[in-house]
Length: 191
Image (cartoon, rainbow, N blue to C red; front, side, top):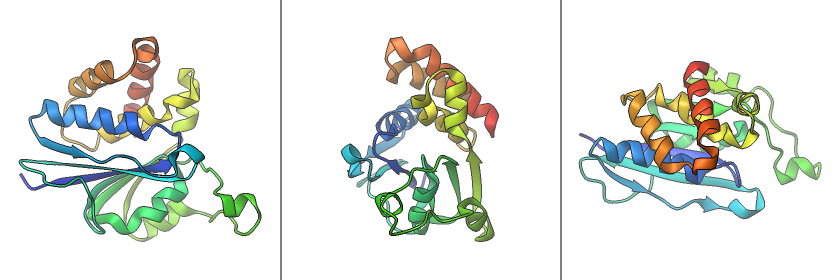
């Protein structure tokens, strides 16, 4: 199998580490060689962060170059636009419609761009946009929006739901397991 690439992008504190662990767990269950990068960016300060996941028969580096990502998972709308050059032709973007103002917007030096999802779709990109934050809040905790997005992503990957549920059980602390199972299930239905 050729190597496939996934990018997880967002803002620090949105749960990209758990997301990469879930995806990595599913891929390992399938017998793939998997490489996951560390989070790059200002994750402690609410800045832009990116995590790379590559899988295939043999993977030598987790780094995803421009034009290589099969899927970009974006926890925040503007981050999807920021990383779109990394998307492969025919790739997919799964994004949360949540908008977190970056510092230039907060201090008045810039304006948050309008209609990002529409602009991405106008570029011919397959975009699945869900209000993951709202769904997570309906599950009982806004912090589960990352797992909501994993539910959406699971519908774009050729692995059965049981593998994903096993990954959730193995990666999520017991005290948050039921909440995250519900968030994952609602994400699968949101697509």
